[in-house]
Image 1 (cartoon, protein in one colour):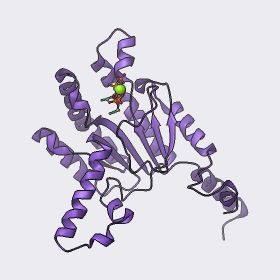
Image 2 (cartoon, helix red, strand yellow):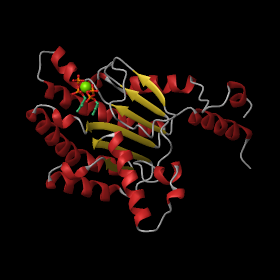
Image 3 (cartoon, protein in one colour):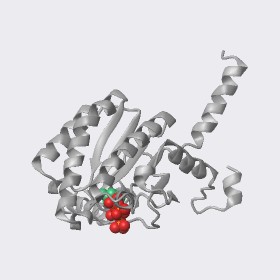
Image 4 (tube, protein in one colour):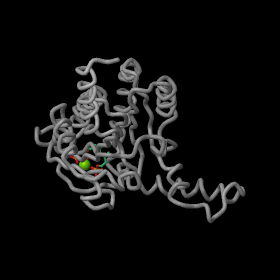
Length: 256
Ligand code: IPE
Ligand code: IPE
Ligand code: MG
């Protein structure tokens, strides 16, 4: 039998774990402004932002977060100047090449969510390789949203379900939240607990529309390249003080 001390410590760890969100998503915004404030071109901000990505992944893994989802490129970001889009694509390729071994070493499963068909064949290959290298890792899932849009995600799930109906695999009456949910990105991960947006704007920008139904929202003025371990811990600490009611009353929550 374990000594009372070990039991007490274990309880403490469990309690601490309880306040750590299982699934965090981040809208990494503010790279351009960060660079412009320094009289530099926007792409300098994107490059600096890579360091914040690395720090955030490391901290999340260390704290025991099970899933981290990062918004890297939205379906609307293609409308930016061609030069900026092409730098972002090159940066994605470069970072994948450089970082994926480190992810693997840290037992992190890597995946990309979004419509990949618009990326170059080379980038699509790199993504596929990175995903297959890390597919069996279990400590944390890192999902990068690229050419992702929340509306695209929902429309895509509707398309799959419709095809199942046409194939007589599903009846129209069986279409419900659960059947749709299973085809929405990240369905196999814990529910989204905490959605962070850096950069001082208060909007979702077509990110995880379905998944954020009951996520706690956290907005910070901090621009993404300045987001570090302390900032993530601050967001988590705020999260742990929130009362999540999921439609129930405060009294009901306290009595469970
Ligand atoms: C977020 O930073 C990164 C991407 C959208 C790719 P921004 O590039 O949007 O930076 P701001 O919002 O213009 O400062
Ligand atoms: C959201 O940021 C997309 C990413 C962080 C990748 P944007 O900068 O594109 O969002 P808006 O345009 O301010 O809504
Ligand atoms: Mg922005």
